Length: 454
Ligand SMILES: Cc1cc2nc3c(=O)[nH]c(=O)nc-3n(C[C@H](O)[C@H](O)[C@H](O)COP(=O)(O)OP(=O)(O)OC[C@H]3O[C@@H](n4cnc5c(N)ncnc54)[C@H](O)[C@@H]3O)c2cc1C
Image (cartoon, rainbow, N blue to C red; front, side, top):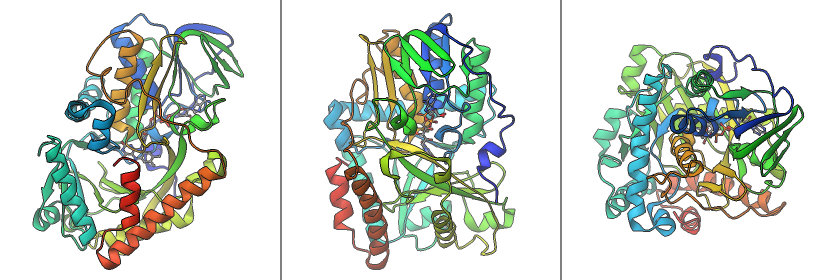
């Protein structure tokens, strides 16, 4: 069994040189994942002469950006009610429209820059497999309509329509969101890094930032003096001094099958390479890869005390086995003896209020973006454009978005964080099992979603 499918299929990962001693730049960016890279990309589009240095502890794309499920989707990780609370009723449509367009924007940029990331916009299908899930699917679409979100963003599928897209077991219906593309995520992040270098940005790899203060970033190799500093470390943020309780790193794990024969695909569907999931609380996500495999992931791995992030946590045999079981149960057309060839994982950043933020403090020159709760592929592009506009003092549709200029509250100290986060994960798992047995919506899960404003 190999590790990450995507990194294995993405060229050369030889590290670039680190920071060669003390240096000066206009903008220092900490972290070379999508957030850091899209911010640099947008900044250079606005001001091509800016001297930008990205400092990356490992290599560009090492984090979630190189390992995710490859859903480039316009999902907002918050309910429309919650968005309206942050930015007013009309902010709902504005944010959804920007995100919907960002999917095409990413595809167009990849094509224009010669980044072959297998982008295919087939939408995503989410099936409802018990009465509780079906009630949620219908409520989701009704809520969308109440907030002025139309069919072009989210529509309901009958049992027949849902099964036509994905021949899953026990389907009662589902939803379909056209604004989603399947991508090979590592190729996108590595391609972006190459494009930026060609435009004059410097990427220093194997350079861990150990301190951030206004005007200066410290590393073991030397300091980088810069008027503007961007913190783009997402799920790794708790490792930075003073930021231990900003985000919780939650692990999401994935598996991939061998390439499947056309005959098998005839029994599964996904003819348009739609990404897929069902309506359970503990999220699962899958895609048909460009080379005909299924890459499939889900939450459920434990949160590690003290917000620790370790390579060992990418592999949890029990969670990987659970994912293989769930996929076989979901897709009866998948041969029981199918070979699973890859298993990996990574972490994503969850803010205390489950609402992303983009902020730039003109006084200190420090900006930060993240807290995408596992929906950061397209959102990081929007966040990067917002940050670039804030930094260059350009008022735009991005700078007025409801997650701009805000900070989430900090997480509790331990052991409360550990108790709370793991209790919610266990509660979701129990709620999904109970809903599958009885078909009745879980009151506890519904209470939790309401409590965090969903
Ligand atoms: C398994 C998995 C599946 C997912 N699936 C999806 C999906 O299908 N769709 C979706 O929209 N989202 C998905 N996500 C979330 C998405 O991948 C992230 O939201 C997004 O990649 C975040 O990008 P980022 O650049 O902010 O963070 P990252 O890509 O994590 O980048 C942060 C970078 O900072 C570096 N760094 C950390 N500390 C330091 C330091 N001290 N000094 C220097 N550098 C440092 C890290 O090495 C890393 O490269 C998934 C995440 C995971 C883990």
